[in-house]
Amino acid sequence: MPAGREDFEAFVAARYAALLRTAYLLTGDHHDAEDLLQQALVRAIGAWRRIDGDPEPYVRTILVRQNISRWRRRRWRELTTDAPPGHPVPDHGADDRLALRRALGVLAPRQRAVIVLRYYEDLTEAQTAEALGIAVGTVKSQARDALRRLREVLPELAESLVSP
Amino acid sequence: MRTDLRDRLADLAQHTPSGSPPPDLWRRGVRRHRVVQTGRVIVAAVLVALVGLGGWSWHSSRPVQPADTHGSPHLPDRLYDPSPWLASFNGPPGQLVALLPADRKSLFQTTAGLVGVTASTGQYGFLDLPSDAVTATPLDVSPPSLSPDGRHVAFWTTGSPSGTANTRMLGVTITGVGVYDSESGRVEQAPLATVHGLDPELLDWADDHTLVLGLDQTSFGDEDPNSCCEGHWEGLATWDIEGTAGPVSLRSSMPLFVSDPGTSAGGGVLVWPSSGRRVHVIDPVPPGHDQPYGLSASAEYASLSPDHARLAVVSNPRRGRLLVGRMPTSRSGGHVPRVRLRPATSAAGFDRVVAWWDDEHVVVERRIEEKSREAYRLDVVDLSTGRAHVLVRQARTDHQLDPTGSELATGLLSAPVAVATAPPRPWDRRTLGIVVLVGLALLGLITWGARAGRA
Image (cartoon, rainbow over all chains, first blue to last red; front, side, top):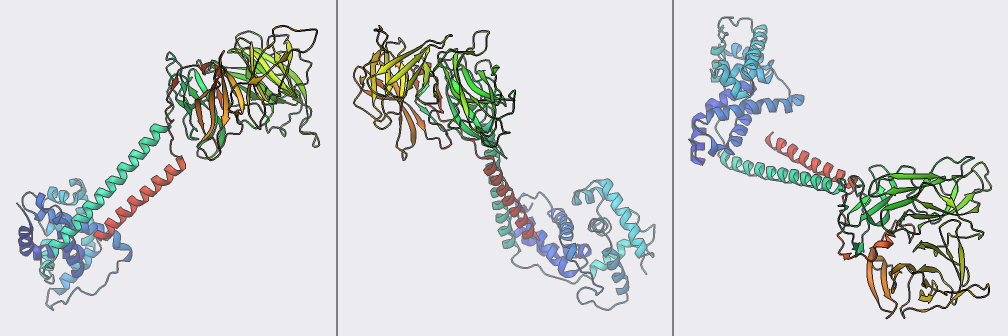
């Protein structure tokens, strides 16, 4: 059970990189991902002493919900770019990653969050619904719509391999 | 090319540029938590204040419950200036001890209203008189009048005359008189015959159920642009509200100018101090016997004692002396009997005689200095000693148009005096609306600031 600053800093040291990867999948931009994760961690401190058990689901919930709020506030000024984030290291899988990143970019933030939580974090539909604060039925419909759009952009995605 | 979404997501995540957590995360989190907590406290305080303000305003402006009609009547030691946002009575108010003309405000308009003060509880509330009742009291129209027992309110009513209406003289066309029963809430109205409208001169109670009217008939309607404001004396009339007949004219050959403020009814008679040293005592029972008396001093205001044995007058507006004289018991040789007046007290500065308190005391009105908080004061003068004590104080009423506009139930002047409680003063609804808007704007700013801080 988290108790104070030491526990928080230990949690951050252990899970920062993993949470940053989730944040990156949610935002598609490295700087935005770092901002998002730091905001989520700062917000979690207010309730840190009240968190019962593993704090990661709580932080992840803040992460996905905060990302949706950020997108709503910032979409009017959001600029998309074709340039890859950061300083990519050339390798033979770069095209796949760029294509997936662009494909994720066409999704609405909640659809994107459902995809990340379901297929990257391997959460169940119920856990995804709890993290997003929506109904399980909504998770299913959001996932279905998101996958359909992803296949439109990435036709190579196998039908059988993306089913839950 | 990989076709599994899980693998491709994992691959994309693995190539996320690495980063390290900033060292001040905990400090930033604690600071943010404090800001959020402070914001919540402020929002809660504003909400509580708004709710409290709304509740208080609602409580102050809700209808006044009718007084307990079985309670004994009291005379308040002070009459307060009622708030224009005061509520009306929720039903008949019961016996009243005073009437106060007052502005009555709503969100969009201000009208002339009439506030009643209950005799048993001293509560204030606007009287809901009929819409055709004339509650405004311009200087040349006699104001609504409260019966001596405080159970009836008489007022003039507007309507359509038989000919062309005259609206230019008074702003309204008066065509009748009405009486409101404060215990039952019933209103009885009596239309009066008129061609162009009436110019009322007198509306007063000779006793608890006898109303005395003094009437001028307006001579022209609005169609004559050159003669708007001429009238002719119609005469006196009385209305016994307990009888079946309506107002009955009194035989009166005198061209009375009863608009003279010294004219008053009470003690079962009408007393009119005419110009010069003379007073007329008129029986309001038809046919209306008129007995003139000569006076040893000029009189502005006069009042006859309950036993009709003595006359009290305020002599002169400058000196305001209270004089008293015994009424002659016999007439001699067709001459007008004469009342010899003598000073009742060495004090001066009285404005008018209000009524007799009992056979040995007179209630007089005194205007207070303008810089004082009180506008008027009623004193009781002991005729045997000349000493006076304060009976009722009345707060300044800036919108009071007529000094005599506030009416006391003269039959209750000798009731036990009670320490008056100030009536509620509801907030101006417009101010309340502005405060609520400011509060909501403050809440919006706090919410917006909190969201901006999270961004």
